[in-house]
Length: 341
Image 1 (cartoon, rainbow, N blue to C red):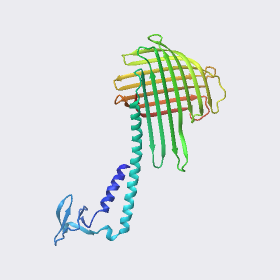
Image 2: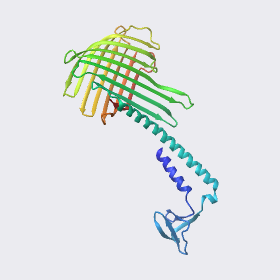
Image 3: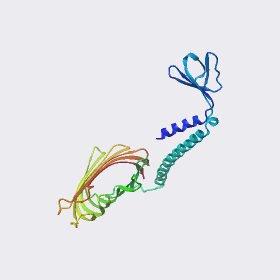
Image 4: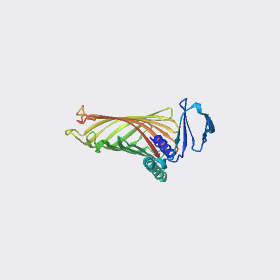
């Protein structure tokens, strides 16, 4: 799109400012254009070209020639039309530059704000931003935000972790109406107490809403135990289970038991200094109604350019059984810019 605009702009510019020229069509089909002051002798055409310099072409090699006159003198209405087209292309090109500048400015402002955060050494967190914009026959805006803060004092057995996500996509239909194809958010808080080198106690509280699945709100609190082990000094595996309660409102789902059991697994791997791999699995089951359950799987790779900036590629899938909405399974691939603090 940008290349076509630039090419058209340059073509129209040369068309507008060209002067009288001599156009030669050779017997071979080639076309040469020289300045209008070029001389025509009895046997030759003399062409003065900016690229080829001054050259002479025998008349018996020329199929036809045409004197190209000034546009201003012959067709002023064509000149006005060409200028109008040029202005329109310039306006479109400026609009694209403005959209890109606004996106760049937004990222730059977030980066500057993150740099100002002076978090304690025991804090470890990041903010992830993804934004997609589409223009043309299909117009939509897709906003993706994730944040994570982990707090643990050095040599302390207590860990606190707060994370959240906001995902929203709105598409404009052909008739001008707006259609929301994604609208979800969730917040998780985890407390872990490592009462031994391997074993830990965990309390997890979460809240989520997913309008497309008909989940108006869902609040859970689960208490359990887990086991941690390490491999090769850079790979950490955690597994565990727990029991708790949930309170949720789902379209079409009758009143259900608040009891819930949970199985969780987490894998953290840092194969290199700037590369981090993370995978999680959470399974939730209503023990009194076996057909009501849901699970979430995430798989992500982060690359850290600097101490403050990185990128993420992430795969996410969640499945909710027992709800009446058509959208039970949701799978997404997401890319995001990461600001560390």
